[in-house]
Amino acid sequence: MTGQGTIRRRIHLVRHGEVAYFDRSGRPHNPRDVPLTPAGLKQVEALARHLATVPIDRAVCSGLPRTRETAGILIAGRGLPLEENDGFREIRGGRLRDLPADGIEERLSRAYAPCGGEGGRFLDGDLFAVFAERVRAAFHRLATAPDWRSLLLVAHDGVNRAILCHALGCGLGAMAALEQDYAGLTIIDLEPDASGGGWRPLVRTMNMTAYDTAKADLHATSMERVARSRHRT
Image 1 (cartoon, rainbow, N blue to C red):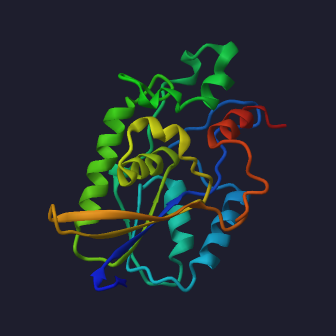
Image 2 (tube, helix red, strand yellow; image 1 turned 45 degrees about the vertical axis):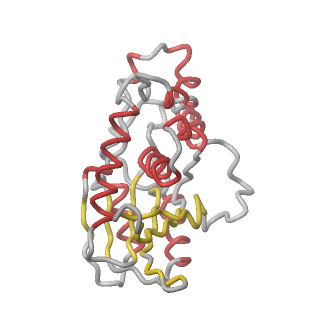
């Protein structure tokens, strides 16, 4: 891709499709194993149609089943190998049974609220700062690799928020405001930074959902949807 003589590369950053984090009795599934739901498959298939004519020459995912499944649909028929990079694995919370039972929905809904504070943790689990640095390092290695021009990266809610904070040059406190819907697409162009010898990000599109481009049915936050899913019937 070229803009007035500048060679740019493009990253298509995608959150995986919908999954069920709880069973119908409200007990949590192991988040490492959850597959896409039927609705999640439809979400990703809509995005695949949207990207059908877009050139992609490298595909990477976090390695968890929900990202492998999502990426597999998006690159079907392209003849591309799918790479796994655990630097993009999702932020981990503490054990739900250790959280106060009478406030667990509120804690889930506001899981990103402590992201900007010193020592802030995700649901009493991973430190936001340590997590974000791990994601930043993985993204930097990918961004500076010379062997691609148009890349697909399928990751997670928290991972994509951390990448956006890095690309936008804002602090971690912005993670709480950067919603990432299921199968949401963010496009980031990278161009050479002559002043520093590295690259400069240009955020082109943020959290586009091909299955609901106007967000008409998307009002709850991603973590509010997780909290509500504990009480499915």
